[in-house]
Image (cartoon, helix red, strand yellow):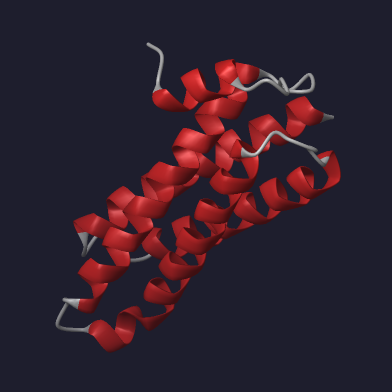
Length: 136
């Protein structure tokens, strides 16, 4: 199945500079999905009765959202591609996803939104690491 993200990558006149097209498209897609999921999780945490206990979870959700959105945006820009910036950003994104997944997992038994968020964050972390490995 061709997604809009893959279609845009396929049509970019600058090419991909040797970056694996499938891994790049998947990473962008997972970063966007993770950003949306973390935003929804933070919002759900704010609606919980014990919101004060979820302050760290909300913070990690929001950090992960911002970093995932930024990563997706930078990965989508292929003109004058900078591999060093991309590698640093992928490392930061994987770290943010790991931290968020760990925090959400601590609340997963009580809050389904945290369970779902932890799963999505773990998947995004792995995809970021996979793309990072492929970049060398």
